[in-house]
Length: 344
Image (tube, rainbow, N blue to C red; front, side, top):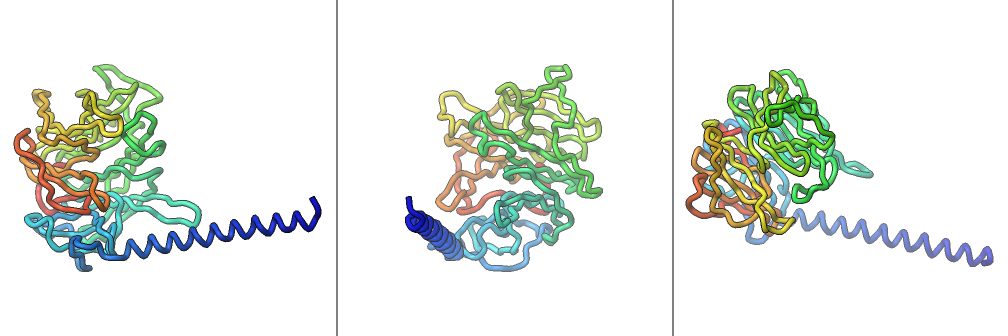
């Protein structure tokens, strides 16, 4: 090949790369424009003040297309499909209790994104922040507001299969003392100390005593509900086939998702409630697969997300196995009922 031909080939390659770059920029710009377009027929969202101490409110991540997409928004708990007040604070996952919030955010970089956990005060102002080592998945705050927890995928990106790894962290928001991974805790399984390289934790939920928490432990292709002790730094297995537990306001029951036999691998879960005294399981009246950590609206009612046209919609369901699911809000995820006594 002559020098002239080599130059022509090089020029053609450069032009092709430039074309791809221009098209990528135009595509990204078009997507950004669509994100800023108000969702036709969607909820009404306007900027305003959002606080974690306003009585009778539900705060959640707004997923409706428009200028306030991904922002924490607030609605009356009695009118969850009503007009939304947007805070300007963007989160991928969120939870709040007793005037403390935890917001898991993406930090967009020139080459790749990173993630962080913000601890928020009652006015959604940042009190502290911590690096999150992977894609945010779950978030919780203790009923007292003294502890926050989050889970991230550090390998794989779905709970549905077996090829994933998670990291669950807990922080004392009063002192800033951080446990970056529950893998540092001593595991007691079936009454004996247990060690395994494949141990994973996710889905922390807190009791009101500022000591006890519950979470999912996975090892050897099985999942367990564990009870954790923040002072002793131990976790103890209680029950099998429990994922993403959520403790009831009175501390007596755990709502969770359970792998059900005969379902597709990408949609394997059903909602259950476990009585912690008797270990009796109650199947709930939701026939669809739920990949979420349910929230207790009150001692009788659960709220959870299912896929929707704009990412996710919120549904409510009785916690005793009766009734049927009811959609309460579209384009919404990660709800928290603020300034009231709820599970952690």
